[in-house]
Length: 315
Picture (spheres, rainbow, N blue to C red):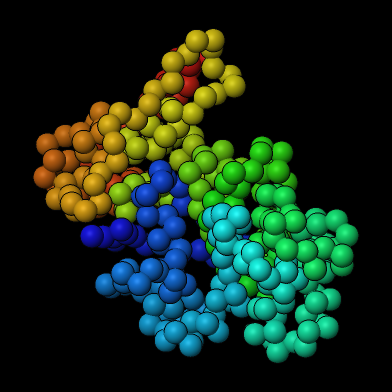
């Protein structure tokens, strides 16, 4: 089974790149593969992940431990389960500082308090001795961000960083990430299923389905004129504030493909309104339809389709 197959992307310092798609499409697996954190049954069969002139996929476990947390850090999806419940918050933030920089406990604890203060935790010097259960959901997520930023990584991967948080806390977390990326000139990969988050955070976006990239381009290109039927379907299924009353949402019919049965055709073909004969027999390659805008489709959505859809919804 190929959870992810044939994807390629790059990211520059100070840039925010979005990877968006339904649950199970391979977003998180992509990030875990980069850091060598796949489950025991998973393996990378081929490919490269070049970072700082080194292929991360070719590093030994020991070499990867020197990269994880220091040069590349990840904010995991669920702070409820990602934090160790029997260790204090301060101890968990200190660990990468002591491991990678050889800091003594006193200096590492002082730095941990600074990090908690930076991510907006009140009374940080007192709270570093608290356990995860003593933090609210939003505070746990902030603590996860503090841990990820401890060693000032060059690449930060945020896997659904606002899952299970209310909208007010979501906005605060996203503002915090945006500010930290700007201050540190770090690269940020934002993994999410929330197109609103992508629109507000990302310069470039990869739309993922069935372990493959269906469309890639700038946020302006994808939100202004989606060309893949799946991207169009995602946008049409979102409620709009400017839509006329009683406007019907247009869900994507059908179910995601069975990942146990690799397709010999377009993975989105069974759910696609734009399918053609080639879609049933071949996997479409990514093709550039305008500078920087790539689509894996034999019959791309007409450029004016999204404009017509929006006009009809607001009429």
